Length: 94
Image: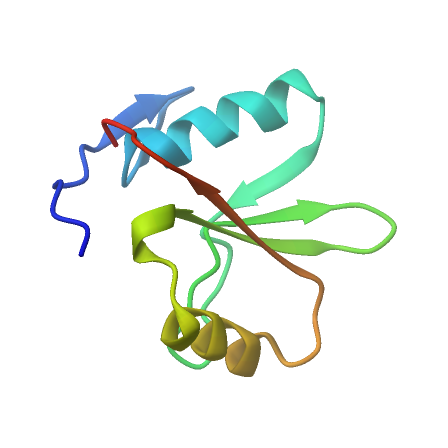
């Protein structure tokens, strides 16, 4: 079980729920991708990001310790056949 408390982090005048999410926002900016943080709610799941493009992609950011079958099933059900990516990272300070 993942026991490290998320640390809110500010980047470009937006507060992200965790350092991990803020780091990904930095990466998306470096790649010049058009994205939005926590864009909408889908049946109890709010994607961390949507990356806009020819085909929009919903992105969930999680420490690898927090990804299991239940999490994937919840995201898959809520995503309703949308393009979804779950990005994980191990051994982080959050």
